[in-house]
Length: 295
Length: 99
Image (cartoon, rainbow over all chains, first blue to last red; front, side, top):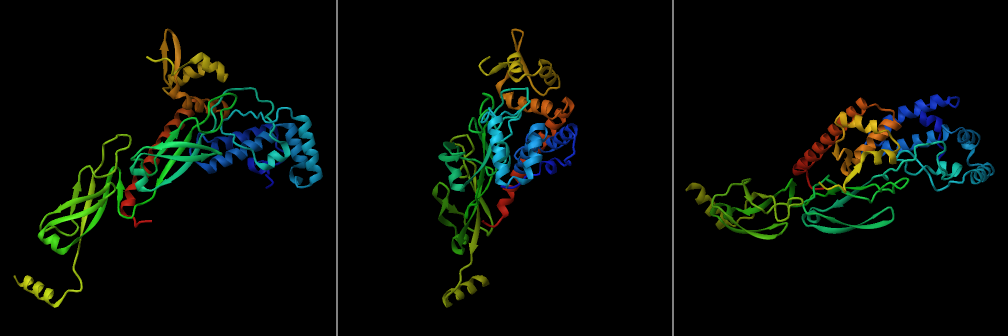
């Protein structure tokens, strides 16, 4: 457990007046409030500390206790005293109230000194949505290709979600009601899942289109023919035109990535030919190539 | 029009312990929309999250309506730039060596 210097957190000294505390809190809250810093974990952490510091220092009773025992919290005797005091004085334990839906948990340090006691002196008992949770889910490109179900554990609860085919790397989906519990009977927050889709060794994706390259032997490239290649949806046969150039592209319509939430619609697959020059030629082959070069 | 997704303004204000004039001001600045049915104002449930955010900014952080308007615009800009970064990152992956 780390000792938290609430004065330092608010950037004030221990002689600060209630007005100084209020001003310092307002200033920092405006800077770090999660509404102003969406999806910023550091800001959220800072805001929780600021909130906690304000919770203690703006309450004369708590501030007195903090000033008295705060720095010496490791001294068990005083610690016990603080605990007893808290048990006697707090009759609202476990019913913490906050005006903000971003309160989250107070630090272990706070809990050890003040328990889970409710904020005193707040008057606006309003219903608020619970905190929104953010999570990241890593998928392979092949996972994102098909609609599938996946189980997630969020705060000890297992939920099963359906991930629609075509989800994009970096895309966020909202699972309503699976965030933090509402405050004062307010609705639960939401769970936001951001997808991180790993690169595929063969296929690159841009939007709904896929890009890949296939090796082509020199003879097929020159004379034309048929090859079989892999797509994310199985193998396909491909007709190769005679005199195909190295690095040339073809488009396989509808063989790309599924369009998100648009079942049956797919992007295209762009194939780049990589022509392989034969190696370890036999003497006969060398003669034939020489003849060819003179023709 | 379905009314089950609409919340009466006065009910909302009573629940949140805020003045109706605050909601009216938000409507006047175009930050929220109010649907009037039989002379009663309703808020679409889809705006609830945004509205609660405005309440927090106004009552907890003492930010006035002009400030809320500016913040809302800038947050939208940030969101759109973040989306653009995601698109560009995904485009960049085309040229990256496989992880």
